[in-house]
Length: 198
Image (cartoon, rainbow, N blue to C red):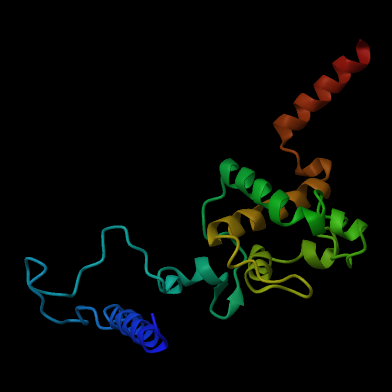
């Protein structure tokens, strides 16, 4: 094949390749908002959300639950029911997301701190003992100091569970005998007496 023949074949192959490049994906049929369409039985292109659909504008559902704020201030009580399962979930999530910096007891002595990362404040400092549950939710949601936001990593319900667990953790490390219910205290005293006799 001579040079002119090769150029002709090359031009033909190039033309065929270019003919295969259409704008089908860019110019595909679609239905615009509120536009009529024969595709659906009711003739409307506007579809109702499926049952159970949650709006992406989650704050409109329950702003307190998703922001941790009411009337411009941080909430002082959980917006969800405090249960044993919630505390267990909070402990599990705390161990995964928080313990590496804050430590398992909340003293700010996590593994990354032992490796040279700056130490966060202890949850047992008076300033944080006095902080509301909304404060902890807000810190996880928006970040605080060197801690980045966990809003994209931890769902809101789990952030509330962690906040509840932190408050329980504070109570466990700072409890006195007066915090123990009277009937449990009596049982502990009896158990201690029996133990000393043996």
